[in-house]
Image 1 (tube, rainbow, N blue to C red):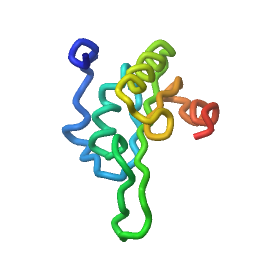
Image 2 (image 1 turned 135 degrees about the horizontal axis):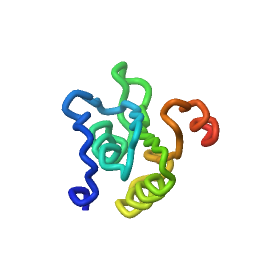
Image 3 (image 1 turned 90 degrees about the horizontal axis):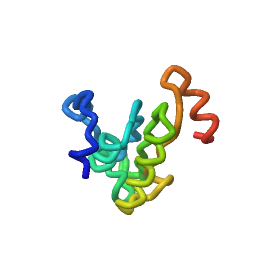
Length: 109
């Protein structure tokens, strides 16, 4: 499914070095392919992770932002179909990358 939806701008995962427990912001998330990979790398697709100090449990989350409402809707649908915890662990929101504060305030992030 992903290969047919790939929009091929770049491969951010080759340089991102996402670690378990990290929160990830996917700007220009499109259909969510990079967000789904970020879920895997951050561990947002599984249970909580212990912090480095061994005390706090981290709840990794991935947020995808895209200008097109149709992309946001499609990515959200795909996340639900994959059984991901929407919106607790992954969510897609409509927003302009130059006005992220507005997008986040609308979703109370």
